[in-house]
Image (cartoon, rainbow, N blue to C red):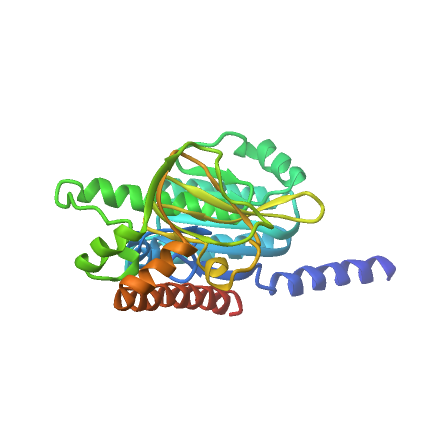
Amino acid sequence: GVGLGVLAATILFVVNYSRIDVVKHHLSGENYHSQVERSRKNLKLLTERGTELMILQLQGYLFFGTAYQLLEKIKDAALETKGRPIRYVVLDFRAVIGLDSSVMLCFNKLRQFTSSQGIHLIFSDLKPNQQNQLALSGFGNEDNFYRTFGDMDHAVEWCENEIIGQSNSLESLKDTSSDHPLDNLAMTDAQIDELSFFLEKETVEPGVHLITQGDHSNELYFIISGLITATLELPNGEVKRLKSMQAGTVVGEIGFYLGLKRSASVTTETQTSFYRMRSEDLQRMRQSSPQLAADFHISLAKIISRRLVEANQTMSALMR
């Protein structure tokens, strides 16, 4: 009787647990972006092609029942004929507490299916024991259609870079134009030319601190080329990436206006060129070209508002 009771309880647990949705959040490139701030042109491209990127944040303990549901969910989405086909599937394991050995059978089937469909399968935030389990099941070596990343942000960033790179390759013969680094200001060409008189152009090597956490704020940067990263140093000494920024982006506008100490550091990752505006440059523009200064303020307000809208969209997607 005891044995039958234990067996019945086990079966009921498996059946009930398999009903729990293993997917905590189902996101796409339409409503979720990496912490890389891009030009308006590239951001528009990523939104238009957002359905090519499928992001699934997993949760709980994975065993055969829940893993099979996951496999079927991805298959159904990949074989959907409407819209753009899925080209990237990111599985985030941050909230996964464990993997049953039977899960590996489903994951191997998933890898075979995605590679046959030309879909890149990407795992992120795997714990060491989960990496070992996968390695023992044939997931040890990365290839053209399978990759791993330390966190979901870098995984999504890689997918976005691939989408942008493919688009640029396809359009390079048709479009030879490039974005002006001040295009994000949404000002006329004449206004941008006039604004340039109040900016200082500079090029620096990798590893240079444009902004240091804790310093006072009196400079604003417009990135012309290169890559910079904003990082936050936590009390325990850990350094966390907040955002990476490329050409066409504006850096330091909040602290510049509020005059507060910098809440994070900004460092160049590659050789970087930028326009710099100091507080005295803005004051000089207010005195000599008040209308230009007013239009400049409106443009920066739009950039800050757009960032807030994007942040709200991401939060809404994560709360579904």
